[in-house]
Length: 120
Length: 136
Image 1 (cartoon, each protein chain N blue to C red):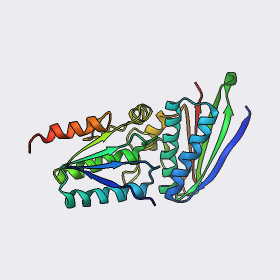
Image 2: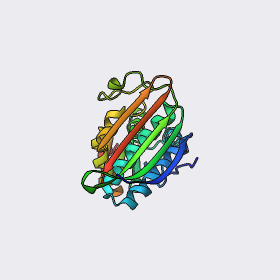
Image 3: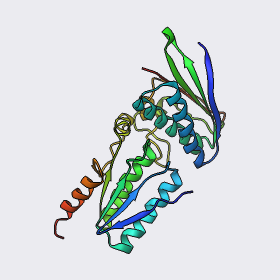
Image 4: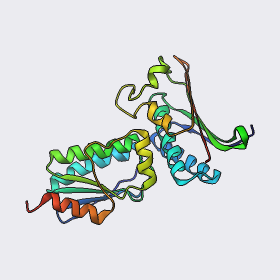
């Protein structure tokens, strides 16, 4: 099983998914992220899925879980870079990604987090 | 209807779900599906492979290139397991229904990603799910 690196950029954590996600990798990522948020005091999590060519219900649910979990630890989550074909498929599949904020790319995702944090 | 096999493999572990996606992606790309339709059929295959693994206790998948009415071409994917089977097929296809542990959206979401969907199951004997997607 491969591990997904979590990078710290200022007040945020960046997760860039570059591999085909196995279910166990997804579970491990949730746990690693929870640990990293606590350890670093990060205020935001950015999940970059621009290299991900499919999101099924399991992976989609992971985004909602991570968003809910980080909110409990006072961090905002934004998913960035979703491919158009992935978005179309998710809608047809009926997955709404409840509670997950999205942005078109990394830069806009950072801006979204910055503005939602304000000067806190 | 001529059918050309495009691959088959066992589904016995979590990494096999990833391999099924890759196998279907390759078959769909070489059959000439658009990127959106490739993504839909790979996503459907991912859902069904996980069902085969989690609910069926493992099984296998077979992929064929198929030709339908008026010469249209497509991909047919068959998932088979020898698990406990599904006692109530109609309920299994109801929107939002999912057996236990909250995995997946049930079969109704997957059904929307393909053009043809058939489910055969015998309690105690296993389940076979066949999906077809036609090239537009």
